[in-house]
Length: 197
Ligand SMILES: [Fe+2]
Image (cartoon, rainbow, N blue to C red; front, side):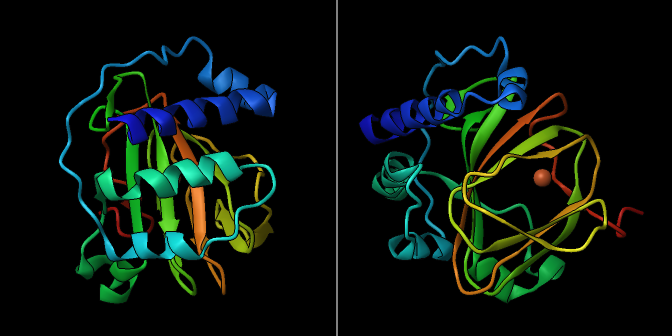
């Protein structure tokens, strides 16, 4: 589908435009020419917040491509109401653009977008795969390895080593973040830190 192919092209172009060693090492050898899966769209309440985002100067094309494709993407949630409550589910969701389940097929790396509506905490969680996050909007706070929440600017490159717990928090602004997973099971359900046993 054209909107989704355009989104993948923008995703790849954004990463290569960053000219960043960490991103280059993380994505080294990745085959971007992937087969497209025909996935049924699935919309979540959090997708509505995409209308309100103010793109930062570095990524208008990527955020515009995401907004243009939003209604044909298969948005998902890892958790249920028993994990972080019903209110969380109203303001949380992600889409796997490529990976073992996503709109394009890869067994090597997964990538997509996380959305968090305003005034929400995504508590500590962890997973085996290594991860890169790039917030595409301003105003979010991030915690790594149990540290204090720190503001992260749009465009920052955040690396989570394997099984390091991490958490995010929003205030007045919606968070849109690009993510990459590699080097572990790509469809693992993130574990909620402290509730592993
Ligand atoms: Fe993560």
